[in-house]
Structure formats: structure tokens, C-alpha cells
Image: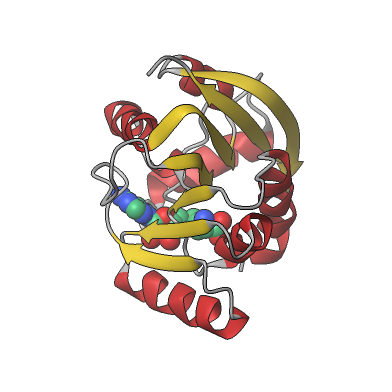
Length: 195
Ligand SMILES: C[S@@+](CC[C@H](N)C(=O)[O-])C[C@H]1O[C@@H](n2cnc3c(N)ncnc32)[C@H](O)[C@@H]1O
């Protein structure tokens, strides 16, 4: 249901990640695979794109979308963000769209540590996420209330995206802020620091 609102932000984030033909890219929480298609178009046939998702159903739908697209450079693997089924240092870029905000505190740190592990030196991370910033508004308060009352329906918790990345071994190099239906959203592109 939220697809039409989120796709504009997801596509913008893929563009700002500046993926070049031939690069290897991982999407964590690839969902139904819309982001994978954009990433695979950017890498071209010389590149490789892997989508990881915890949910078997999401993987099934994403695989079907990739097959229909004919973009043979993309594939989907079922797995967990906190223990990625990927070798160390094998990606140029990692992408997450409306996924990092599913993880709170220590779990988010664990996911970002996995992102660092699978990225090569100078690897880039692109995140698009609901953002916690500034003063609460009526809409953000209503969203927080709904998240506490109906956690099985509202499982995203807006996060201070750039600060979270800075605190977990990444240097933000590009940021765009906006809103979806009054809820703050941010695209942050960050560089891996160190090895
Ligand atoms: C809100 S959806 C976003 C999907 C997609 N990135 C998009 O922008 O449309 C979050 C996705 O993260 C996946 N997910 C949730 N927890 C996960 C975990 N621990 N490891 C990997 N994927 C996870 C869900 O199955 C879901 O597909």
C-alpha cells in the first residue's frame, strides 16, 4: 500500500548511490524486489546484485520480478540482516530502503557492523529511512502512538539516520531530507571508514 509513496525516495536513493556498471551491490531487506531492478539496471550485465530478505514470501515475489525483468545479474537469497550470508569485503555498495528503521539500538548496530564487514575498502552504504529529527509533530506523535498500540502493523521506528551511521563506522557524504505524509524521511549516502 505504501509503495507509491516510497518508490520516489527509493529510486532517488539508488541514483544518489552512484553505482557504476560492473559493480557488486547488496540490498538488505529487498522486499518484493523493486529496488533490485533499479540496482541491476545501474550495474548492467557486467555487475552483480544480490537481494537478501528474511521472509520467504518476499524472496519468492522478488525472484519472480527479477526473472520477469530478464536482468540476469540480480539474484535473491533468504537470510538475516544481522548475519548476512555473504563473504567479507565482496561488495562495492550496500543499499537499504525502509529497512534499517525496523531494528532498534543494538540490533541496528549489529546490522551496520555486517554492512561494514561485507563492504570492501571505500565501500558505500545507501540508506533511505523514516527519520527521527527535530521536534515531534502531531503526525509523528500519532505514528509513535500507533506503533506502540499496534506493533504488529507499525513495525518501523524512525531513526536519526546520519547520526546512527556516524556512530557505527560510516561517514555520511550526501543527505536529502523530506517527508512522506508528514513523516520525516531521509536518504543518506555514507562511506565506510577504515578497513
Ligand atoms: C518495509 S519492507 C521494505 C522493503 C523494500 N526495501 C522496499 O523499499 O520496498 C522491510 C523488509 O525487510 C525485511 N526484513 C525484516 N527483518 C529482516 C531481517 N532481520 N533480515 C532481513 N530482512 C528483514 C522484511 O521481510 C521486508 O521485506
